Amino acid sequence: MNPQTNLNHQAEEVFEIYPRLIIPHTLAAGPGPGNTDPRVLEAFATAGVADHMQPDVVRGMKEAKFMLRQVFGTSNVYTYAVCGTGWSALDCAFTPILSGDSVVSFVNGTFSGIDDLNIRMKASSNADLAANPLDPKPANVVTVKVAHGQSVSGDVVEAALAEHKPMWAFMAHWETGSGRINDLQGFNDACAKHDVMGIVDCVSSLGIAKFNIDDYPAVTTWASCPQKGILGLPLTYAPISFNDKVIDLIKQRGCPSYLHNPILDARHWCIDDGKDVETAAYHRTHSSYAVASFHEALRLLLQHGRAQKAADYAFYEKGLRNAVETMGCKVTSNMTSLVVFNLPAEFEGREKELVTGCREKGFAIWPTLSEPTQIRVGILNQLNPAAINDIVGRFADAMIELGVALDKNKIMDELNGYLAAR
Ligand SMILES: *Cc1c(COP(=O)(O)O)cnc(C)c1O
Image (cartoon, rainbow, N blue to C red; front, top):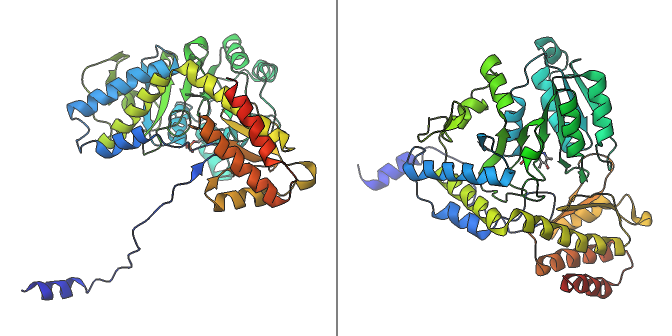
């Protein structure tokens, strides 16, 4: 058989193959993902192929676990990371909620709304699921809605927990949909007072604000993501931390997941029976590339310093906020990684048009995903004067294109005056 015949033979199989996928660089200036640091990408691309039990891969996971405890500010042994995105860690965080458990969840935007949906799915009976398969409404879950643009306050949490006395309570720390910081201290205190186990979505705050989760002991579970404050987008890990109360509960009652079972998942991170151990137990095939890049992202974060990073976010967010306010926009957020705002009154209703125009030019800002429509501009990993100038300059150009009368030079001068005064 000569090669020609062979080729012809193979050609009998006809496939439609697309050209190699090329994805352009954009300026990721939305709520997430953040711009990946070149060091993280390099770690990803230069790691060798090695299996999930190879000693350096396992060592990398152990070191990542120890670094994560510092990032979280915790001595919780069950601190590790779940393969996947923020929702993967959150799914793992909600897995200990069993069908029929009572829960109060607080919703003030898109993301806490999705968390609430997952909680309702987990707490449902089979009949609840059958009645409304994609949006079940079990009577044992009480959803407390707080208006878009407002924070969940300690008073609201206290009143709801006093009334319903649930087993679990849930809140997002920073609600990225509306850009609002919720009252973590108030949530913790109400959970402590009513003996409720608190679960917090800290996807948007971990690695941006400085806080120690051990200062909030009534919050028994914390879940975050790879792509926002941690800045390890390439296929990595979503940080998670459980205190012993949850782990003891799972030991008693179990939970209906192999993959997102905290006790089993943690074993591959060399956590077994409540303590750090030397050897990993297979849970799934962890990727050497992903471990290396996640490890590097954590090193970067700790090298920057939690306090310094938090201060940098606050400083640059203020520069961006001042600039959009000078352009006539009304800011309603108080997070430090993101500015959420309305256009000047006469341009209201044209937010999506402006965002679409920016995105077509590779300036990847976002609208809100639930009503009301607002604009979201973020500064993840954009903590330097040149990056903030780029964002403000591009946004000013888009406003001018929309027809807003503004003096771009004056706005840039003011921004640079502010940045130089640090
Ligand atoms: C981004 C975000 C999520 C979802 O994270 P993914 O990485 O997209 O899975 C969940 N909660 C909050 C508060 C977020 O900001």
